[in-house]
Image (cartoon, rainbow, N blue to C red; front, side, top):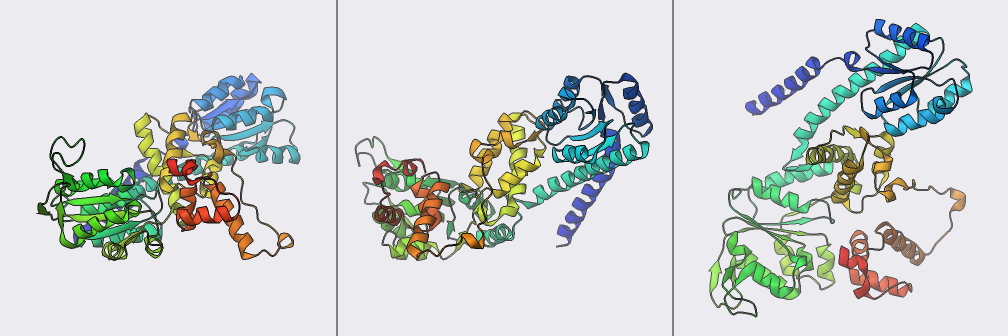
Length: 488
């Protein structure tokens, strides 16, 4: 315990040292000055030099815009007195090039309306000309302090990301911290564990973490996706087969349970298995013994078993699609992974984690997202959970051309996402429960883009029940033609 406290103290000391030794923002903040009057440009540059800032000066808008695009300057002081490129159109172009840049607008014709218009369009400040030295000093000081604050926050966030990473999983929400803590406790003593959660929440990552923390971490971890194989192939994959036991069995092969003997077997999507296969798995769990396909020999095995499902197995038991005895064997220790919609506070941390991952993968140096892009990510319901968020950040890292990922770098359906409407009391109308059910099912289907399998998972009902509801409402197609089922 003492060693743990010392390590924590060292970490804090290292962070504080890093913050103290880091260069001040005033020395690294390089304003770009844009003015078509050479005399005023020189005078402004001299004033800024006296205030302790090195500056870049130009009389050409395209040069200033290029300076921003290349990341040479994150602060632009621009004279927008004239129309054309020097008007608000130019301000819009600059902010599109880099949404994180600060623009201080300067003009000879100051009015309250023009100042408010500039601020509304995204300017950081509005200074009348000739520029007052005191106001300029205060504006530069405020922006410099903001950059210094962001730098310190970035260092602390990097340290926080390291501290909150749990074997490749990150989260700071109470729900995820509870998952991490329970997984640590379970890993020391488990024989069977059931990991439940929606598709894309990271069930396999949790299973791998449990194996890595277990006493058999040095032994093999065998992974099998039960939904990807038909029964005959799944049985051969898990238990092995002898030569000649079926067409194509040209040699004798061990199954995953033998392969991982002494280690761990992870059965993903166990809820997709048939009742016949469930009976065979129950025997493995109860007796820890297997039989290869086509062989009468019984082999004893010693494995830890982790099963995962995106279904509500209790509901599946009631519906007769999952064996009750197998469910109770598996669920003696159960870990539920909450969906991303239940832990939105984890989204910024996950974004930072994936940015770091794909910056390294693609050779990029993208520090973060623009504010409007962050707002969109926080409002999105994330039906695909963490996997969907990772795909969004991965594609955005590829397409982003500026320093920050902006709204235009996100997928099209996120760019046009509208905030949820809040109806007034006057708009309320009484509805029957039947109508409420119809509306809710349709909204979930729309959110899942017609994927009925995913919609059934979100609604916590079986796919057959969903088809029955849709058929009753006159909206059901043939189950075999459901494109969502094939792509889920």
